[in-house]
Length: 273
Image 1 (cartoon, rainbow, N blue to C red):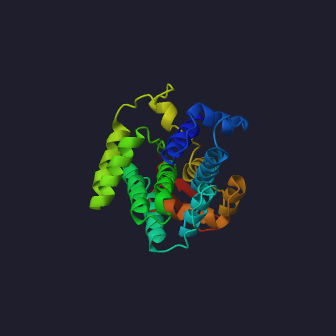
Image 2: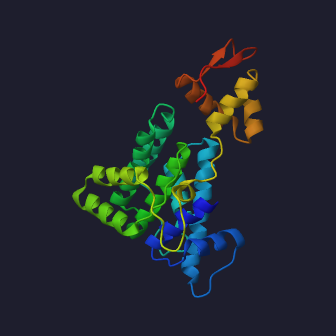
Image 3: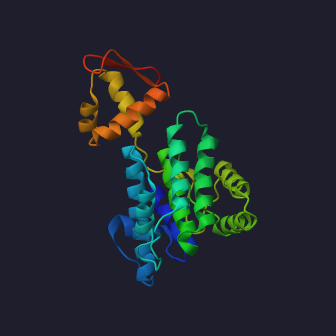
């Protein structure tokens, strides 16, 4: 995942790591450490990679990203750092609510609305700072995971100094829009190469995105309308409860409807986005 390398390199750099994107790529792909770099900063990159992979896998599963899951992802990302574990509270409840609301309406949100939800999530975690000075790191992680869950291209923070300055101003004035609008502007602006590398926008932000669980279910039911929830669960290797939740959302969004009874009926895909 070349793009994941770039995002991790940029995020780790904001935490004081000195690895280049190429060094991070070699560390993640080949397990080769770099001479002259500390073990802690290299372990930070490995922990971030694991947190990103877990977050994206959770998004692909369609399962709820609960406050407990948020704490798990944060703990994974911060494993190598001296950060007390956050016991949980209203902050994570609110963060989970932003994620849940955005995913529930993923098919009706515009691209900018989806991006704003991810940026608002980041701002909230930075504002409430449940992990102290490392909360911005978790904010970037969850911003990217939500972007991925909403079918967007997760973005790397390319200009770390400007990002930190704008975020600091927004936090000091407690004005979310300052940060959200800045990030939205960066999302739409042409990407500038980072020093030491030729990183086009596509290379920086594009994960190897797979079809979402919802998209896969619609595709399966379009081809095989008599499949049961248990059949879908077995095919996707997720729980029947998770499938039933996805089916409820698809029906509520007007993408799917049930024709006939639970036993003996079939599915009709009314729209496939």
